[in-house]
Amino acid sequence: GEGEGEPVAELAEELLAEFDSVDTSGDGQLTFTEVLALVPSLTQARFAEMDRNSDGVLTEEELRDIIDDDGPNCRERLLGLFGLRKSLGDVLVLGGALIVAAFRVRQKN
Image 1 (cartoon, rainbow, N blue to C red):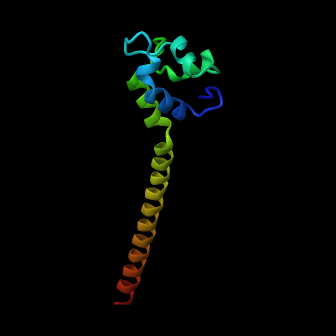
Image 2 (image 1 turned 180 degrees about the vertical axis):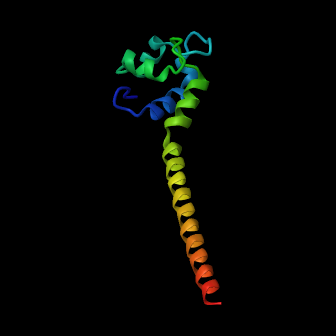
Image 3 (image 1 turned 45 degrees about the vertical axis):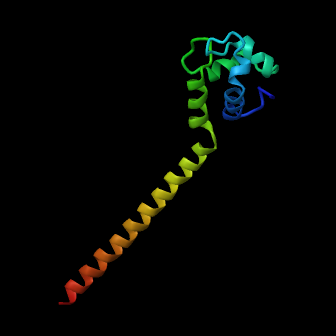
């Protein structure tokens, strides 16, 4: 692993995949020292960024949350929201055009 230049979600995926081997104490938590064995370039600041609840250790749940929040799916969800926004805009334009057309037909009668 690279650590410092690697996107947080990729680093979290790497740690999650190797969790049991990195967790040398077997307590279900990764300390900064344990993570350094896999990612020697990791800084304390980067570790703290990943430690969402600031308890000094990383859990599998925290790593999954990082992947869910910062991973590729995050970008896809964002694009999905823009797609939804565009679709709603199209519906509003179409609705407005129908209202104008109905108003014009009503005026002629």
